[in-house]
Image (cartoon, rainbow, N blue to C red):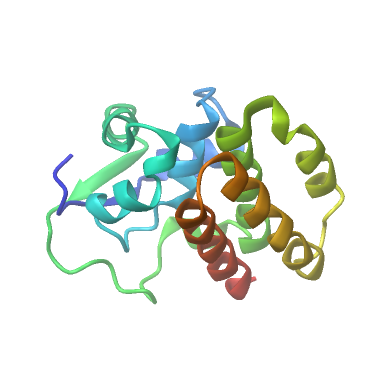
Length: 159
């Protein structure tokens, strides 16, 4: 995928978030959750560099028909209706936190994911953010942890 291309979830990609038919790896699923048609492939590669070869993950998602790439034109407007809007933002945030923690930590994420399973409200998820940032920074680096925490904060702001 070209760096100036703007990936966006297809209807199949939105369904995959709920149905998990493709049994995606945690890294791949994390990236799928994060794609909203607002950031270029280059921006996603920079933010998710700690999870591995983001370019090949984007190519895999595109090959599976879960995302489509639009040219480097202006990104989709933030208020444009999309299929993603049908997913509850709180559920999307929980899934993103879980998938990124598992992708970054592997089995070491077990204790954190147990805490996450008990967080049902926006306030409880917000309270987990400092620990989420800490475990990601320990496993990867501060820049990755900050980028992922900002994404979660944006998701929670919509909840």
